[in-house]
Image (cartoon, rainbow, N blue to C red; front, top):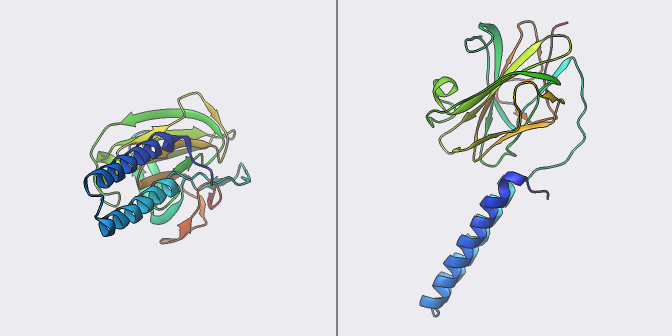
Length: 220
């Protein structure tokens, strides 16, 4: 299992915490055998949870100028027509992917092209499914324009557990479809805004995979 670079510090801190906890119990309660076994088991579970959260699977990515890849692992929780008011200021089809703590948390570019807009917004930590989380939570807004001039906008949105959004892109960058653009720690949501007329290939409640599931086909 490959571990994402964003997990190195968290895993090291987890190991240190487990070592100190077990050393303290061993020193002060050497005869508490039952307690020590409970702590051993809980320590192993904690380590495995942190390890699986920062996993970063490798796979082949099929690119296609006409399609939009899913930016994150998770479940489709929103498919609706809405007004995108920050950048595009027009009607778009919004698709939202909820990422639970057990999902892979790597975020991937839905299309290839040039990053035309990027902005980080500090904010609140409402639960990811709260109606105001898209506009009030900590988030980033990124817009990529492909070679045909079609813009696709998407947002990383922090949730109640997510306290750190990481991004690897800036305005002017040329990015590849399926390449990593960021990471969100401990569960959250990614919204993507598509042109009207896009053919949507997913349904509400569907489980999707970042960089593998084709969310939609762009209008010609």
